[in-house]
Length: 284
Image 1 (cartoon, rainbow, N blue to C red):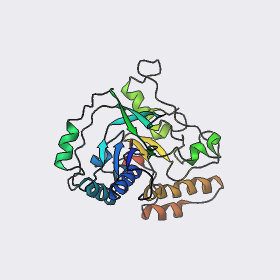
Image 2: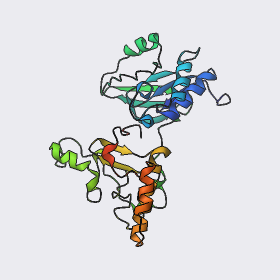
Image 3: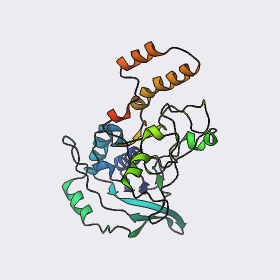
Image 4: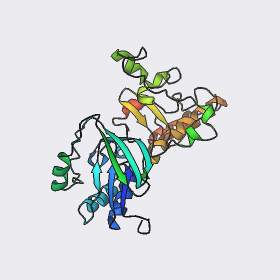
């Protein structure tokens, strides 16, 4: 980062990658502005994978207390990046203001003065704002993933975008919304809502369009009555390995009761999503 050309940057994205970039730039004495759709530096949840890691929080906390603190702005959704004669223009739109209570034992990332200054920043929902930088912006907003972009992309169905408000496809009935997030109907539903853009899977993580093809790893997402459940970290998705192995073995006519029982004893056979109290949301 010290050898990165320039000394004033725009960082798009405020989760782990964005905070890593911001803390490193600050440590190198470089200015930066973080533009994020969610103020993850303020988020504290029951699911550790949907908030910043303690190490990352400490690094960005140190950066904010240092001589060249990053400017953290949210909720801002970037919709365009354009090149001009002086460099680049990042165009963003303010979203709805969300208050994050923070964790009981989590120290605030921003200092009191920084929080007070940020509170005075004009941020009316829907208002557009432009940021100018001589360097190309740093994109730290994640990626679509190998499942959606790789060789098997045509072998999975994906959740369809939510219909715009006012369309005939809107789900106004609460029962209908709940059903759309019920993992028992994974093979039939079209996606949208909690499965917007995610690969659609059966309860055994099998493709809904290609029998015999199973998905394991951080791309696995299931809709539950508690909200979208993303198996985005290894301590989560490893609990589904046994479910997939069981489905394959039973398909081959093998007896699996003893093996499944052993996995359950080790809490490594997660087939009851209702026991999952917290679930990843926009972070994943």
